[in-house]
Structures are given as C-alpha cells and as structure tokens.
Length: 285
Image 1 (cartoon, rainbow, N blue to C red):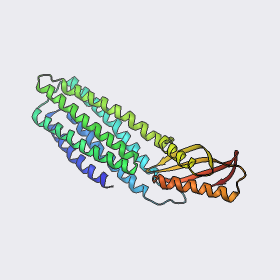
Image 2 (image 1 turned 90 degrees about the vertical axis):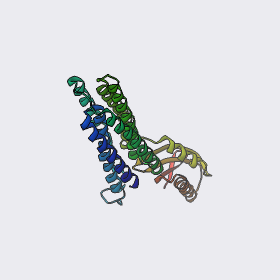
Image 3 (image 1 turned 135 degrees about the vertical axis):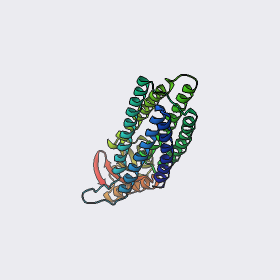
C-alpha cells in the first residue's frame, strides 16, 4: 500500500509537468509520454483498491477469499497500456500529417529528462516491493513504469531531432513510443492472463516436489500443481507411500509433507496432499 501511494505521488508530479510542457510546446512525443504517465497513476490507483479488497476475509459466497481481486486489477493495468499505445499512434499520425511545428524545445527536453529519471525511480521501487510480496500486478505496473522511462527517452530523442532541423523527428518518436508500449503490452497481457487462467507455477511446483520427496516414507511425488490467487499460492500434490502402511502412519506422513511445504514456502496459503499406496488413495490432507 505504501509503494502504491508513494509511486502514485511521484508519477502524478512527473506526468502533470510533462503534460503542461507538451501542451505548451506542441510535442506529440512528449504528449504521448505524459498521457502514458498519467495513465499509470490511474492504473496504480486501481491496484490500490485491488490490494484493499484482497485483505477482506473469506465469506460463504467467496470461500477462497478475495486474493483474485489483485489479479483483476492487473486487467486494468493492461487495458491502460493498450489505450496508451492507441493514443500515441493517433497523436503521432495527426502531427505527421498536419506538420504543426514544435516549440520551446529546451523546456521540452528538460521535461523529458525529468520523465526519464522519475519513471526509473518509480519502476525500481515498485519492482522491488512487488518481488518482496509476490504481487504480479505490482510487478507488471513496475514494467509499465520502466517502459515510460524508455518512452521519455524517445521523446527526448525526437525533440533533439527537431532542434537539429528535422521536424518530423517528433512524430516519428511518437510512433516509436507507441511500438514500445505495444511490446510491454504483449508481455503484461501474457502475465495477467497466466494468473487469471491459473497457469501452473513451475518454480513453486519444483520446490514443493523437492520438499515432499525428502520426507521419510514418501516413495514418489507426482501431479504437482500450483496456482496463484493474488499474492498467495495454492499447492496440490500426490505422493506415493510404501505399501502396507497403517492408515495412521500414512496420515502422519501426509501431515508432515503439508507442514514442510507450508514452512519452507511462506507464500503458500493452502496445501492439498493426496496420499496413495500402489495407486490407491488412502489419505487426504
């Protein structure tokens, strides 16, 4: 929550400054970058409400809790990325066709530099916090801010080109920024879709399998699954035990596997352990 509030404040200052200078200078590259930054503010606010919703306790209607609300917030981020790409392409096309001149180049370059620095700081901060709390939407939003830094650099290159006597450099830079936005949009869409479609987390499944097979009495581990719900993950695995075990012993081994996975993987919320002996289910934890 602190990361969201802090980054929103920084992005608001950066985007409003760039927007004011863009309107003053007529630079479409700087305008596209400013709108992209401003869009980040609104998407970050969406993630904020997703975090608040995810903290609610489970109910009868939503027995699995509200962790998925964070993943739904990621949809808002992705939508903002694609809208930003459309705006960048449209404004650049209009500028290229109309031939409207770009003015106040020095001021525009200064605003672009501020955009580069501001977005780099915000992106690194959100990325670090996102990794610490295993938040896919916050990590996606950090990538979005990192792209904004590259977009600001593109705007700066366009303004330098105009200053060197090439007026088309500004709309061309706008098109380049649009392509960068499309690139990050594809990656962000894939990340969010994986969460919403319960894609199997290979790193978590390998770790759970390694922990389970190390428990005495476990002969094999299979059918390991791991899906994320916001910042928490659910794990399901099937273990094969030695034959002729008493039911109480088998149940104890299942419980030990569950405890080990929970203790060694703190991001795990629920663990389902299906125990089998020669293909026959004998205990479920």
